[in-house]
Length: 384
Image (cartoon, rainbow, N blue to C red; front, side, top):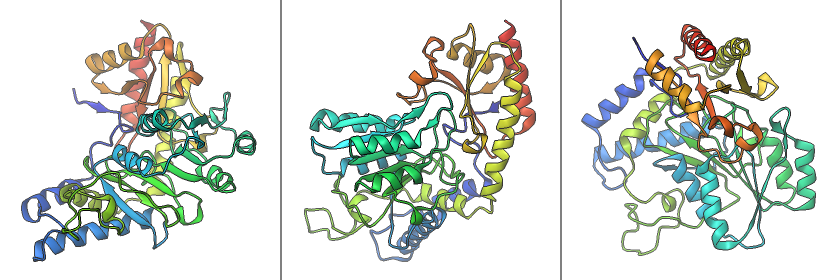
């Protein structure tokens, strides 16, 4: 029986064929060290990197003056951003209740060092959406220094109103960092028109690229101190990191094979607006059918236009990992169970008695027939 893969929120799989072909080709013919040589292959590799930066900026609607910094992952990108701030004990940091540990553990690390305050952005507990009027009131009481938000929740699929929150935060001069790991390539992004200073992306998620490449887009208004040091191929006699962006934040050899895969995914002729619409239609089909199953509890934002194809639920009488094991072993369906590295949202979902949630991640290659199989499996499991 063929495996049904429904864990696309963890990583999209499979990738478009062009990604595999591009990575194979460059691994065989051009996997050299970009920026470290003047020969033709090195120049070609450097050109590919710069072309990929341009594509990322265009996709995110960023200014020409914005910088794209490549890292090995979105988690490392979060570390570079938060590790590059000049923290003070008096800082007030707001986070959304949907944050991933890629941000939260880094913030906690620096909070222990500097003692600044971390507050949660207000959440409407009924709709499971941010409460914008209440957030504006929070900001008047305790002015934000830094605001950190996920663009899309990796637990509920909720698309956060990051532009609106950023606009309010900028009234107090706050720095705004957004984790777009579950968004870029799927949800429209227009950084040029927003107050977002740093926008994180993960190549292997909604961009449909490979593991090994992520990064962030940086505006021109906030600078970061170097978080990592090492060789960059430039100014090599200087013991300090070079001052120019993005090289100052990119020590080490770039992963040209992964970047080639990312570039191919960006060049892929995919109608991204249509993909989001398709995901929502499949998510609607799944949620409407799961709601009919006795014992199934859904965790969804109320507004269907504010979510992607991530759906989480529980089954009365079962722990999440038990359901995941049954789906895998008896039905060959791969889903994610547990807490999804998101430490704050689960107290609002009240899912601890189930050991977290069962998460379905719909992707570009998900078929409705696969969701029908899942629904039938859940019905059988719920019946005991």
